Length: 154
Image 1 (cartoon, rainbow, N blue to C red):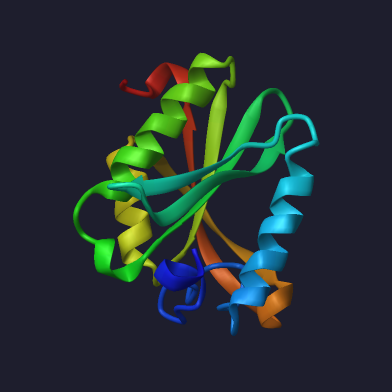
Image 2 (image 1 turned 180 degrees about the horizontal axis):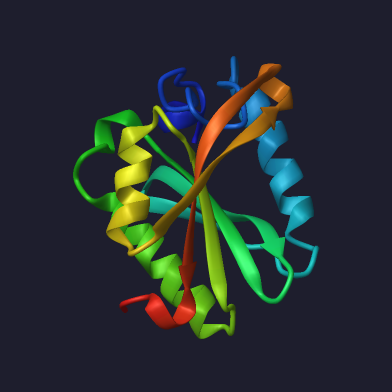
C-alpha cells in the first residue's frame, strides 16, 4: 500500500487523508483499519492486480434506512484502465445484494476522474455541499450524488 499509493501526494490530493511520509505511517493505518474490522457494518477491500495491491475501497459511512457511502483510491499508474470502475461496481453489487437501499457518493467538484467513475454507475447528481477535511485543515465543495437500489444496473 505504501509503495503503490499511500505515499503519493497526487493520489491523496482529493482524499480526506494526507500522504503517508513513511512505511511506519501506513503500518499504523493498517493497525487502525484492522481494529475497525471488529465493528459491525464495516467493510474494507484491497484492489489487486496480479496479486499486487493497487488500491482500496471501503464503506466510509452508513446512513439511516440502509444507506451507505463509499470511499476509494487507486495508485496513479493504474488510473484510466477501468480498475476502479470494476471494483466500485462489484462493491455496489455486494452491498445492494446485502439489502442496502441507497448509496450516497461525494467527490470534490474539481475531481473530474472520480466524478466520472461515480456517474458511470448510474449515480445522479443531487447538489453541492461544503465538507470539512480536518486532517487537511480545510473546507471543500463536494458534488453529492445518490443511487437507489432499484435504479442500479447490475
